[in-house]
Amino acid sequence: EDQVTQSPEALRLQEGESSSLNCSYTVSGLRGLFWYRQDPGKGPEFLFTLYSAGEEKEKERLKATLTKKESFLHITAPKPEDSATYLCAVLMYFGNEKLTFGTGTRLTIIP
Amino acid sequence: NAGVTQTPKFQVLKTGQSMTLQCAQDMNHEYMSWYRQDPGMGLRLIHYSVGAGITDQGEVPNGYNVSRSTTEDFPLRLLSAAPSQTSVYFCASSYSYRADEKLFFGSGTQLSVL
Image (cartoon, rainbow over all chains, first blue to last red; front, side, top):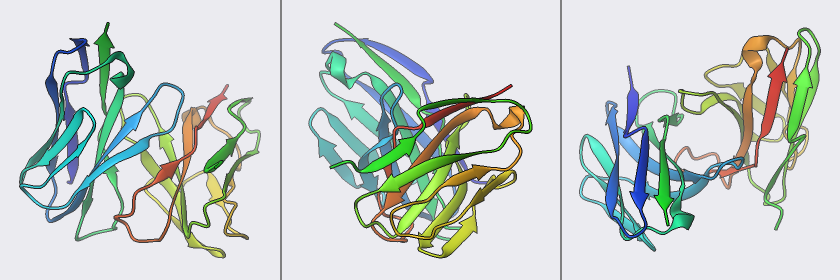
């Protein structure tokens, strides 16, 4: 069964304290891995798509990387406005061509 | 730009009642979908549409009905609400029906069924 696991479930960091969020997946034939950000009371907002192992994407203080079994979302020198839940989702080549979402990591940046 | 608009924001129903969650997008997107988000679970696809007049079932379609008469609108109908349908519902759209297109989400409807 295809699975997406995100860790940690929650993470509290001091402002400026860099860290990484993990998204591991067990799918046969990854077509794409997606990262979304979700603020409380809002819908998810697209951040990145990664397609192949070794690929990296950056946006402001965020950098997403992809290996054959997991993806990392690195947050460098975070600010309080980076506080949100970060969701990853995978799309596989074979099957129903629908996204499988993880449960998210709730990130809190303390001023 | 309005993007994806969902109404209502909050709703309380009694078991057995029916209602329609509204979703509209102004981006001329081909693909529209409905997800539900429950604590401890990832977003799960309920129904989706790849264009006007075309709909299909997702992962958890039971108890829900959809139609797509226009490109802009994609309402979700609860036929006879049950407590298990208490959830947060999100409508999402994308430019094309390609599965690797990024999704644009609405702000959600929080539904409680008593």
